[in-house]
Length: 475
Image 1: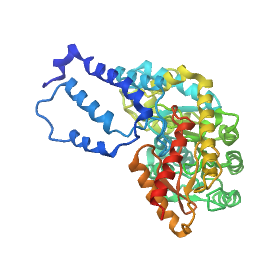
Image 2: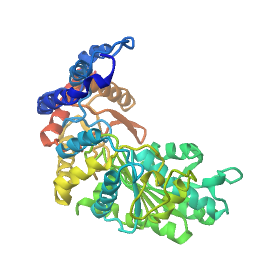
Image 3: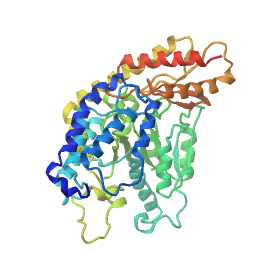
Image 4: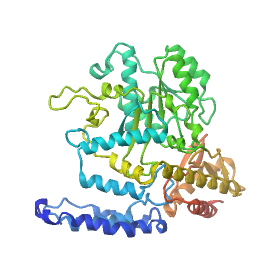
């Protein structure tokens, strides 16, 4: 096979292969190991020289499905707790297939009114879901990191403007370092966004009152006074090791008092707004100047999906628009070209999976899923507290349980090494997937059950497997 044109009359055949493989694969997820290292040998079949004459679409897709359904990390299943990763709801997955089928160039209204209108609708629905003001502007991004880039680019434009510089046209040359303040809960993606924006990864200053990283409001207040409010505050809603959050209302008070910009990292924690049980954690987010969140975490839409919202809608076009290219349209409130409002020029129609899942399950369905996960992680926390060889290290607040293996007779100085080895053993075993992190200087587990399929039985298996593997490793 040499030319795709030769397959124009059978173009649907490879898609039919995927459709036929989907149901048995999805049905088997609850019984599969999350990752089977014995299947890694299949990855070699992806390799080899670039063929001069191809196999044809059917043969190529058959090979990909055979390798992928066996050797993939099955993170769409109910027992992937490593990082904060959701799966894909049935509607979101189908919406993603439709996105590839329609293959819209979503950056320009002229290229796809469908993609542009869908994004506008989705952004409005998301603001309603999270309780953000309808007046906020927004744009969909590939990830929370790019959502941070978007929000912090708006903050950078605002900050440079206070120094009399249009940073969009003139850049950062000659400007001082932009002060960025946060607590010890700040995520590495915020630093990466600052790095991308030329502000510097390590220019961010943290103010923590304890070893857990909780914010020192008084120290931040003093620092803001020293820079006369020309600063950006990053509030963290949902930290990845414990689920802890900054007091957003209190940080909003600081921002208001000093005239600073408040940016909220709500990658998964913004979903706390959906339940009365956790809505207090998100209190004050409506006062922020910019807010970010992920779709491929607690929303359970396929990778890649992020959202960025800003209080002043015009700040997006000031940071990313006005390119001066004759073939590109000017900004339009109705026929929106979203590539003028974010860092990407070429964009897939990532609104379609979000539209499909929100239309399918609505506000009540997402609240039910969030509250089920809250129940699951509370159950996990209870199992940990009841186990004589496990130690819960932080209160269960959101969708993460932070704990370590601590059997009798093991000295404190040996626990980090034991837990690190147990983490490696758990990933090698593959029945459940939960890696380790560091909390207050200790090596810990921090599983985050946010997959729509996950139930209490799945976290019960996690505890069983951890204790089984731990007993084999402990001296």
